[in-house]
Image (cartoon, rainbow, N blue to C red; front, top):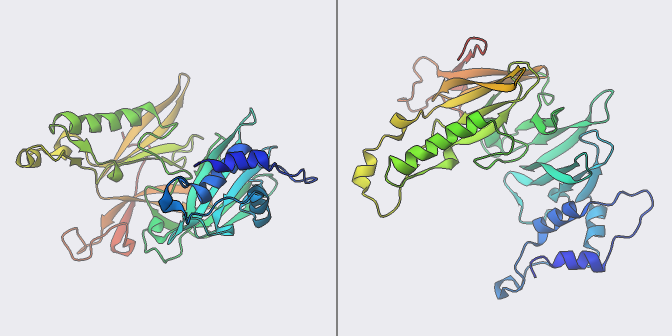
Length: 341
């Protein structure tokens, strides 16, 4: 019953509109799930909306389903824009869900972008078929409050994924790290270097063994793509763990667990992993950034990594310390990536 739209799609096939691309089934299913992901056998869901027999046609007319040129490939990319019909649950203070699906070399479609945005525009790139995506995100992504404007940009990378882009600004701006991602990662994102994952695994092992059954609070640790920071043509990675800590099972000795210092067993810091192309492949160099936070200075030409430090008189002990939420109280020191090990 939950996937009733699959049967409906078979019974009410798309009409063959001349010249109109037909959305692939995986994209149709994703759009249906955003609007109609209910267990209709549950009496509590008697009120829940159900897909119309011509629901796909309606999505196309409303432009919830929209063919776009984003990656620049021959096959059209497909966008699911919930804001075009904002009746789904996937809307909130951060806007509505926006997805982009792109075909691989075998013609199979994969989701390459999935974020809540308050507004979006696809903008042309001179001399190219692909376009870049301008978005307005929740203000917290800019180190500010939810209602504040937070412009950002993404574009298709030559390496086959969506990367952060500096095209949204004509003047230098600061954005706290980690940067917004095209896809919200789980703790082990696809494509993350083995060096990054190995360090994350060691942190988890510390909590699982040394703390008598504890678990690493992954909500305070993220593994993310960063833009190419050293100019070698490969996007770099970050592991942000300055705020990570161990949680414990309800039935263990809390007095004993409090004596366990997780940060004494592994570094509670943020780290950048820089790529280094070699004849044997890509090697990764770790750049520790400490626990004080970092930002990116973004221009149309690229991204520069800066460490945050408190202005004189604005240390952590003050009422208004330097933080990602109040960058005006910080000073910023460029990170020399060529000399850091």
